Amino acid sequence: MHQLTLADINRALAAKEFSAQELTKHLLTRIKQLDPQLNSFITVTEESALAQAKVADERRAQGDTSPLLGAPIAHKDLFCTQGIRTSCASKMLDNFIAPYDATVVSKLAEAGVVSLGKLNMDEFAMGGSNETSFYGAVKNPWNLDLVPGGSSGGSATAVAARLIPAATGSDSGGSVRQPAAFTGLTGLKPTYGRISRWGMIAYASSFDQAGVLAHTAEDCALMLQAMAGFDTKDSTCVEHVVDNYSANLNQPLAGLRIGLPKEYFSAGLDSRIAELVMQAVEQLKKLGATVKEISLPNLQHAVPAYYVIAPAEASTNLSRFDGVRYGHRCEEPKNLEDLYKRSRAEGFGEEVQRRIMIGTYALSAGYYDAYYMKAQRVRRLIKNDFVAAFNEVDVILGPTTPNLAWKLGAKNNDPVSAYLEDIYTVTANLAGIPGLSMPAGFVEGLPVGVQLLGNYFQEARLLNIAHQYQQATDWHKSAPAGF
Image (cartoon, rainbow, N blue to C red):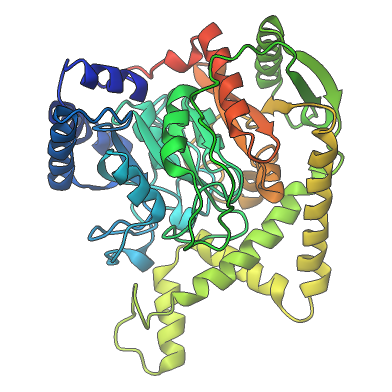
């Protein structure tokens, strides 16, 4: 049962091959047996999961055929879940029980999913390796000595290890797509504003977007269908028609125009990954696509711009965690200043403190124009690059990451090196466009992802391309040994 996709599970439940309760019990047993070596879950909600599965079975017995009804998933631990700890993988929120459900959580609950718990992540979504978590690093199921990517590393590992068929994630600079690439999954970051951010604990508000990790594009389409839509509670959520994401999955790719940015294939890209990217291009050409070289001239400025703007927003967002209203509070503070200083110093980890300091510096009176405003101007140039590119092509294709997953601890003392791993993913967040990573082969036994970038609200097209590619290849079916 644990090898099934969401689409398979829907068909099996409809055919009464097993019940949602049987499936939930099976996966809860796998989590107990296998997750101690992976550390992908922070909280397992066994009791409520079994209750939700019972309700799902009752709804199906009454004739409800909703595609996600009874499907087991889990949520990245930055989506508020009523009555359940929502920690953001931080000591600061280790004792925080959310008083309400995030919109993403409530929408998926309405669709009938069974939530098995909350997944590990980089603290406050700050990191690309899932090593900054207060609850310890998450391991990559393809090699337990390697990182799974981040910040949605717990989501990626849990799905790749077949503990759950799909999971929610969030993507501020590649935090869904990079771990998807490192663990052999399909990961989708929708257009900024496509999914409500209400109840999603903020890192960088103009970048954060909820996303999905699953085995197939078909499963991502099912999840996105339930998650997308306008929400009056989120002022950044866009009132835009929600497509039927599954309807066009089987549409042929004849006439599709793919752009290959020449800047992607620079000295910083592992040549073996570049070779797999070109093999994916050849496969898509066989399916009817045409390919054209394009230019994204401001790509080189993407990482510096991102790591000025995002920490600036983080320093503002995280100022609310001060030891006064909720979260960690230091013991016996001498005065208000001592309360603030010690609560924040004790509650936040090293990477979070680093980004708060960078952001505060960039926003300070003497440096605001020199850093923050200049980075915002670069952001506009990057967006303009994409606008120009999409006048020539339908989608942009390239590597998801420049390198393979690295060893746990290898970049702990070199944060800049870790930041540079985001070179191909941060541009989508800077511009607000959708992106998808799909499995495209292996190097040294490790998964490699290829990234598709689309124009605004073109998620259906990305899912169609990925689905057609997955009908012609079987990389997405590969499972790590032992799982």
